[in-house]
Image (tube, rainbow, N blue to C red; front, side):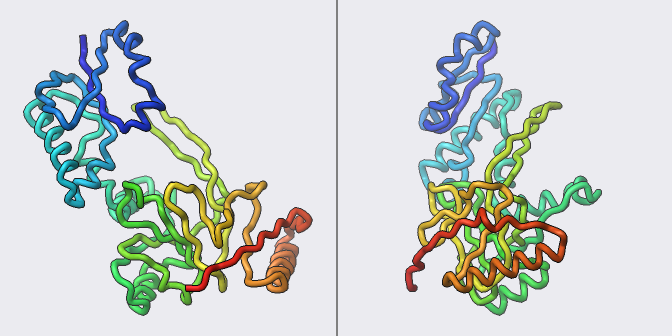
Amino acid sequence: MRRVGYWISEKKRKKIDFKEQQEMFRCAGIELVEIDLKQSMEAQGPFDLIIHKVTDILARANDGHVSSQNAIANLEGYLKTHPACVVMDPLDSIRRLLNRYTQYRLVVDSDIVKDRRCTVPTFVDLHGTDIEENKERLAQADVTFPLVCKPMLAHGSLAHQMSIIFNEEHLSDINPPCVVQSFINHNALLYKVFVVGCKQFITQRPSLKNLYPGNLFSLYSEENHPGIKVGGQNINNLRYADDTVLIAENKEDLQKLLNIVEEESRKKGLELNSKKTDKSQTRIPKM
């Protein structure tokens, strides 16, 4: 019988519930074993295959978290002394994906981009708060407003926070170290593609509504709360996928923006249904 060890977070364990599936795997000649990274891997083995999701532990280990470093050393030590054991995914491969800038460079340097089968939004890494220096780096990388700013670390509790900056006036809102991308309008839809062997799976996920550069407040996501908020109001929970978000300081300016959008739409042969317009008033706290 093959022995497959697995380590996933408690949250994912409850969702996947490997224990309920143990009998099914046993009938297929596979023994599922939950791994305790705090205990000796050698004592828990042997394993023919190890499946894990230790990305967050790896990120904490890189930040100097001692217990996380011990857990990773325990796993790596076992894999080193048992080279025949298959691991999904190799830790060295995961380390390459911990840094967002490295991630993006890997994609840019891939054949699929070189062959122009897909494109990548322009991006740049920023490590300081000097506005003039950041302006220069943005210009050199051809990054345009609105800007999407994401933490350099791609995993962990803070990794999903991000901000959107609409103009140079608010470049002081950048929180380095971070990766800054040009925001590309995509009608509030993202597609996630998963490839396993020769099979691929695609899921559709909601995303940000279309946004445009302008004299607007920067927007911030909140930890453990999906979406972008301004003044406590969610701006990516509108009803229609092709809605466009307009933000202004008062109703009069908002109406002016709406008039401009309607006029420009007509020039391009597009018909805008402004009757579906929904207004939300927010209060921005003074800094």
